Length: 166
Image 1 (spheres, one colour):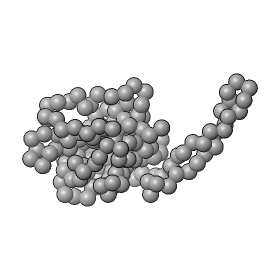
Image 2: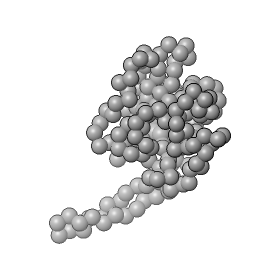
Image 3: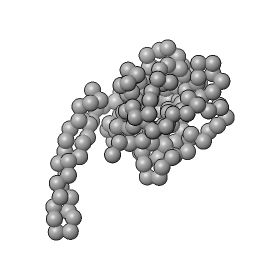
């Protein structure tokens, strides 16, 4: 469940004082390493549109028929822009409802290295297919996710950008 958080107490030295800071973290879960014969790099959850899907590690035409895939950028939950592409097919593990996501919605990326990280949508755009500016990171030293799918007529791309919730 995306809403279950564990509160960790973290003590930091600040000069001569010890400051206790509560840090919210999600419990680590093991993400399966393959899905239908393809390598998996992460799990993506978007509760608002009831999407839970595996992100396949390598982008290819065949992989896109199975699930969403890493398209460009850093590995999941690392600083930089992790870009995920997927068809807007009606399958439950595809981006059919991505156009219903709103600014402020939350999404979660889980991986076997870092764990589960919460992101908040800050930008939604529709662009022409040759506009690749969304692949660039918006911020420096921030974990960012960009989700990419086609409009229903496949003439444009829907771009959803989210950054880590601090």
